[in-house]
Every structure is written in structure tokens, then in C-alpha cells.
Length: 234
Image (cartoon, rainbow, N blue to C red):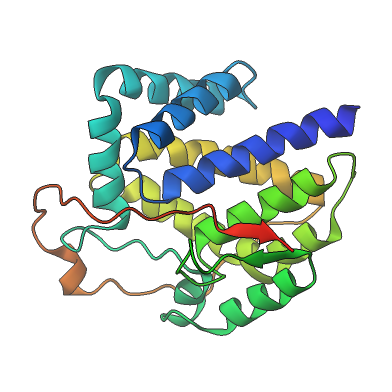
């Protein structure tokens, strides 16, 4: 029962991060995020996550859905702010569709799950796909003490890039709400590493930011809805 309760919480965390790093635009999605944050904040991992949850809930109360939509757009979709890569290949090879995509595709093929290309057009090494895939693996068997496929996802793909991804979010010029998301993700990843018995791997190659990604910030731009419910079972 202890494993089941822990794994349920882990799955909720992965689902939350997947939602926060996807395109936030719909009220239903926003309400789900607010509800999940409220649920997880009742049992924070540590004092850092407790403070992060407090700040996130305060943001919801003061900025609401429009504030989250704008900041989400500025960090992950706007061409006028600092670029945050969202694929593992980009962090490792300075380009999308690299070796990390191949590795993630091969890992997915080891499972009963497949990418739903109708609802998710991005690569298999996109951060949202990786997080959602791990969530599905946990939910597949909540009683498991350790899932070897999740371990492989970390060792081959996620572990190498996630710390730089977190730093990029935390240090972004438009990051306010997402600073606390970055803190929460950092705390959670450290817990996952402890559970999986793996250590932090430093990313040896960092992408140099081009002047194109440091232009003056423009106003909020509404974009087409993107659905990140991307993993389906066979």
C-alpha cells in the first residue's frame, strides 16, 4: 500500500509538470492545474516545495488564468523572449530530431504505449512527452517498487538535460510563477533520483543563445491550442 500511495503522488506530479510545460490556454486545463497544486500542497516534499506551492497559489489568486497564459506563452512559445529548448536533442546536440529522439522512441517501443500523433505533433524527446510517458508507466502498475523502463528513460535521456532545463526556466527574464515551478521540479527530480538510485549527470554541452532569441519582448500572442494528452496505450 505504501508503494501505491507514493506512486499515485508521483504520477500526479508528472502530470502537473506536463500540463505546465504544455500550451496553457483553456479554462478547464487551468482549473485542473489549480486543483492539482492545491492537492499536492497539502503534503509538500520539503520546505522549498512548501514555499513554492504557497507562491503558486498566491499567483493564481492575484493573476488568475490570464496571468498564467501570458507567462506560459512568454517562456515557451513567444519568439520575442529568451528561447527555452524543450527537446532533449536540442540540449545535447543543439538541434531537434537528434539521437535523444531515437533513444526515446526505442524506449517507448519497449512499452505498450505509443505516441498519439493525431493529438501530439512534437517529437518523442519533447519534455512534455517524456513526463507524460513516465506518468503512464507509473499508473500502469502502482504497486511496483521500481520500474526499469523509467530508470532507462532517466539514464538515457532525462537525467542529462533536466537540470539545465530547470535553470533555463528559473533564470528566464519573464519567469515569476515559473520560478516556483522550477523550484518544485528541482525538488521532485532529486526525490526521483533517490528513489531510482541514480546521481545527477552534468550536461557537458550548452547551447549558446543567439541574438535572435534576445529581442525586445512583445505583447502576449494568442496561439493555436496544442493538446498534450499524447500517450495512448495499444
